[in-house]
Length: 163
Image (cartoon, rainbow, N blue to C red):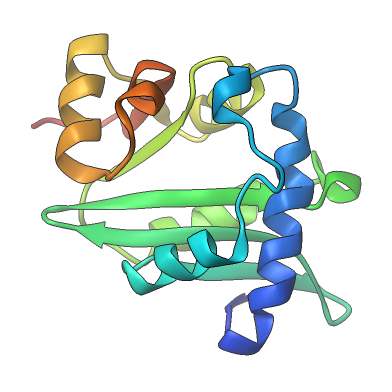
């Protein structure tokens, strides 16, 4: 079942994000990796900034989360994580499919440039990596992230994207 996460899910969302983010260890630049990957204050800040988390639940347990955020004229997919023990079982794809039905706006997704598995996942679902120039412009327009993160990220857009 896919459902909107509630305030009472905050601790579980935090756990899923930090568990799933273990995949980045040794992959993303060391200066961008923290422990925990996302602390509770940052998670609350993201929610306060408009990121709405949706979760995949099975037998009463949240196994994966994915955020959606409407910014200006686009929708961003943010913070997509599945518990390590449940990855590669279709949970992320189900969440992405559900969130795609929630907007008619163009969808953009940012991820780490060296997270090849994440890029392949989004490409499999109809997104494409934009050019470096377009990436830099889009990250500065739609995200609030440090310059170092812009340098080490990619943006994927739906095939129908044009801006």
